[in-house]
Length: 355
Length: 265
Image (cartoon, rainbow over all chains, first blue to last red):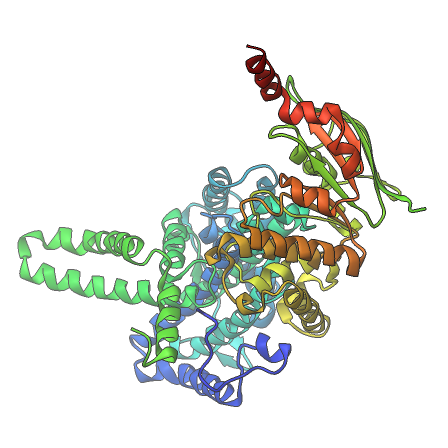
């Protein structure tokens, strides 16, 4: 189904079959799409600028979660905590050692990945629900630590420190439009890396653990080693996302979110987008973040219409809306938007024979 | 004179107080087809699980080359050249046929995870080489038309065949087949028997087979081991086993006696 290619297109080599961009037309389209996206925030710096940056780092965090939960099948509720680790790592490296942004972002990934490994260790013994509880521990321990240890570095009980504006090639990325050049470039890199995971040995090992861990072990996949790799990649991408978020918001700490709610929303986005699919993170993040804006707008309009309930509408309309959207998706589109997209694509290619 | 490839000696396995295997001994000769038969619950699959490292017997040893399989870590057994299929198919249902077979090439790929993520140099080369190898197996098993179908959507008979393909993709020297023909119709059984014989003859793979279909077992195997309630009750060539009174008793047992009493009465 998903493998239907446009009529008249035939692969003549395995290399060609494994390519993402199969022909020159697709390469040109990809280049145009990337160029347009780079330009996009200029169209409306006030709205698209912040939204696109938010999308970029959310998608990066989702790509990490997609590898751990979607491919490897280990449900994690700690993704926001690993973002916090990466955010602090990048900020502290820039403040205290003066590292440039292109070094602090990978370093943030490595540090968060290392912390992710620690919380991945229980996966040797427990799986399913119990492992989820172990990742939940990360979500409680890490923010608690940032408030209670080394207050001179981590901001202590105030829960925030200031983060300097990153500078690249002498240009200070001090507004959303300029910052998007950085966050979108990082997103392109993480997209390439995570997509490669899905088509190579690493990704197949992850999926074999998800689909049948007994068979995977008997076929020579070292379960523990590969689960830890999944934890590392997931946390590292969360760290990269957190670093971008910190530099974009020019502050980091528990004051800026990074809570359990955010971890759960990330998981919700992934489910809506499509677990274990390449497009899932994109669909999930775009859908929910745009719907959130719709919810804010609708809450405000409703508050105007019903002035008596305006306070309640302004504060609680958004979470109710989010809950309703999630439930509707689980009922009507349980396999995620990426699955629907594949169906539409197949139907388009089979026209006029498809329904 | 062919040599012993897999030597099972004095294997005893119990779960708590439940003794599943009692002191099992047999030797699988190189390039032979060795069948394990017995009534339901006789311990056939448990024995296979011991060989493939999924169960650890309390006593005894299983020697394969220089290795004692009862002490080898589970993940190290496939690289030694031992592959198996499962009674209840254990495929990766979310992957397509090609990827299921590619997943079994895991132990033959040397790329590290960073190379995988970059899809550069060795990783790309290996993917293409192994894809070619896998496609040959797909050709051999005549499943080319379903190579890009998600395995979870395929019917039982084809899944059995894909699982055989996945075991072959490991390039094993010993292939353990757990009821490869269970639940199949006559045509499918014939196909499967043909594949098993082809694998045996063309690739020189030694085969250990559990099967309930006596016709098939007696037809294709060189040696047969008979288990009942965790004990070995017979062993030999198909002809020897067929005429072994102990084996006949295990299979026909009580019914035989009942018919005698009825005749007497």
